[in-house]
Length: 174
Image 1 (cartoon, helix red, strand yellow):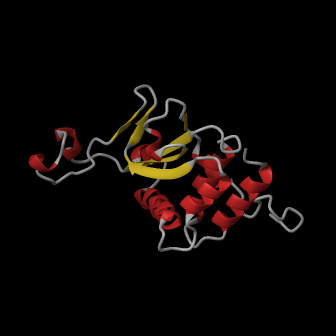
Image 2: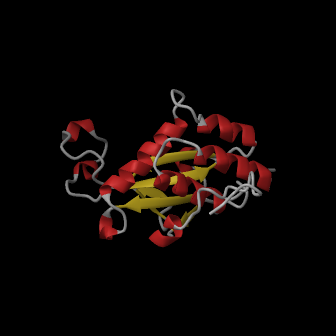
């Protein structure tokens, strides 16, 4: 069982990374909604509807990639193993369809040839940029029927305070 102190340590280490604040806030949001790493959660960010810009979505993808890379400083996968929760952070192109409980990757490979893909829908041009981010027991949350799809307003994520992880609460300031 993961405790509040372990969650605070995980958030502290994420807060110290050289990635965008938005990527850190998305990670914090997933952690905060996972009920101490016991509830699988996911969120889709898209530039459709002008909620997020393409640059912001790509920034979060890049940040998650850096944190997960064994060539960078965080080694997020190793930290998650240490937590003992069995949870991992993952991301993939596409939007989570909560009704079908699957990832819609339509338009993932525009410009490719039809013989290069398994489904012609992958070739559709002009789709909005969209990525789904999971904190779950399985990569991409595909095998779990327990993934809770979160749809926060932009302000909820923007207002996350990265300076308050809870690890050194007596030293944390706004």
